[in-house]
Length: 276
Image (cartoon, rainbow, N blue to C red; front, side, top):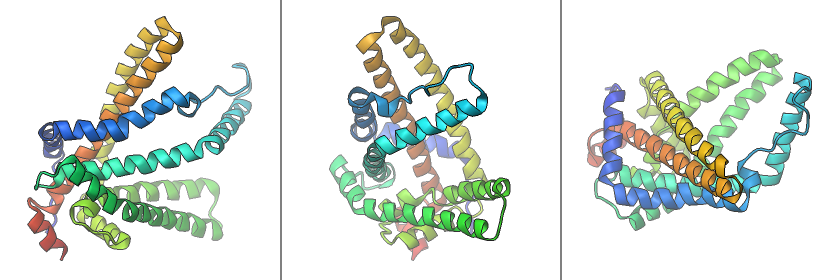
C-alpha cells in the first residue's frame, strides 16, 4: 500500500522535530553547518566569495561568459579540496541530525555521531553509485549521437528524478541501519514510489521559500556591514551567511526526516517489518 505524502503535515512535523531536539540540534548544526563555513570566511575568503572576472563591464556578452567560466574553473581547481572536505564533514553532520530527528530512543549527541560514523562510508558509496549511473546515461546518449541540446533536455530531468528518488538515503542508512549502498538506494526508491512528483514540489517550494527569507535577511545585514566596511564587514557577512546556511540545512533535513517518518510508517518496528 502506497502512503500519500501530506506536505503540510510533513512541515509541521519537521518544525516539531527541530523544537523537540533544540539543544542537540543546535550543537550539531553549530559544529557541522555553522563553524566550517564561518572558518572558511575568515581563513579562506577567496574560497567563499567568487572573484570578479578580469574584464570590463562593457565587454561583449560572450567574452564575459568565457571569462566567468575560466574564473569558475580556476576557483574549482584551486579550492577543490575545500569542497571535498566540507562536503564530507557536513554529510557526517547530516546523518547525525537524521538520527536525532527520527530515532525514537532519544539518542544523545554522542549516539547520533556514532550512528553517523557507521553510515558515512555507505552514504558516500551510494552517492558515488548514483553519480556513476547518471554519468552512464549521459555517456550512452552521447555514444548514440544525441545532440547537445537534446542531451541536456534528457540528462537534466533524469538527474532531478534520481535526486528525488534517493532523497531518503540518509534516514534509510541511519535509522534502518541499511549499510549496503545498493540496498539503501533500492529502499529509498521504494519509499518514494507514488510520491516522486509531490516530494519534488514540496522540497522545491520549501527551498525557494527558505532561500527568499535568507536572501532578504542577508541583504539587510550586508547593507549594515557595508556601511562599516573593512574587517567588520567580512566577519559580519561571514557570520550571517554561515548562520543562514546552517538554518536552511537544518530545516531541509528536518523536512526530509518528516517525509521519511510519514512514508516509512509510524514506528521503527513497522519500518523494520516493512523492509524485511
